Length: 381
Image 1: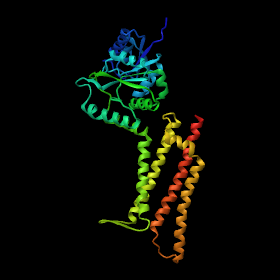
Image 2: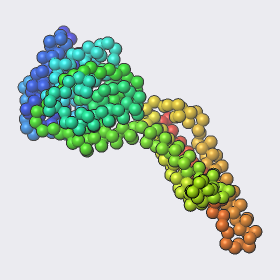
Image 3: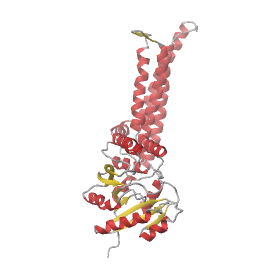
Image 4: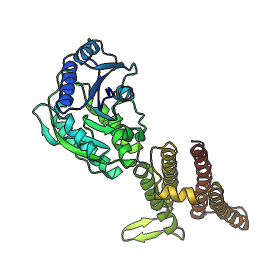
């Protein structure tokens, strides 16, 4: 007789004595009603109210994760799961676990992951605060869709089903509430087939452990850090162009546009902006290289081009060329100064060009060296 379960339901638990037993029983009955061999794993995260004992009594297998955190509990519970299909849900009775078979059926259609959409289903009165329902969840889901080219209604739902093979490709690591975002981001970047089914969301029993602003910020921070293109590259390119515009336009002298007078003061600001932009741009390249090196992202067209064309030697030569051009302008200023008997000389415009080019060249050299260091790690991996 085959005792290996077909579906493992993983429930994280921290002081859920009021509901964990009911959730375990509900999940087991739902699986049995559809003829699915199943198990329920309760990943206890340090409960002190007897939740583990109640979960065992209801038929669950309990594992213990001493490291606190939503992600920590799930990582421990999923490792303990034995089935090729895994369902994750909260143990606070907010999700109707009788809907689990619907998610599993969707996986059988060929999807790698299925999300239970609260925003696309029914949210019962009192189940979700107004701020979460109409502001937090829509904004975070919309941002995630925009940054990672997904089309989801509810990216932060706690009811999800996925195959073990799909999960293993995600290589999840976060230990806090951002675990939910990491799963979706990684699923998008690993090109998993993701579907949604509408579900009913119920009011929570007991006190919520979700901290609106703290956990919302953790989700937002994680989404931005996983998207160096939008956090660094695009702003970096914009700043470089914005900075060099007054540097080039005012090189020959001041400009008057209508009532506005533009002089070297704008060149000083432009130099600072251009250097800041180049620093931001190189941080973006390094960030993308780090994600690729750690298998958190597939190389896109930019990284593929850099890997194929931007060798350390070419980076050093490019930076050295900018540095030498800047030094060349500096030597020109020195010669003009000598020709004027080393008297006071106003060569601020040329000096700003020289300074910006020389510092930019140095930044490119350092960036090329650091990018090469990341590539060493990639090859070792």
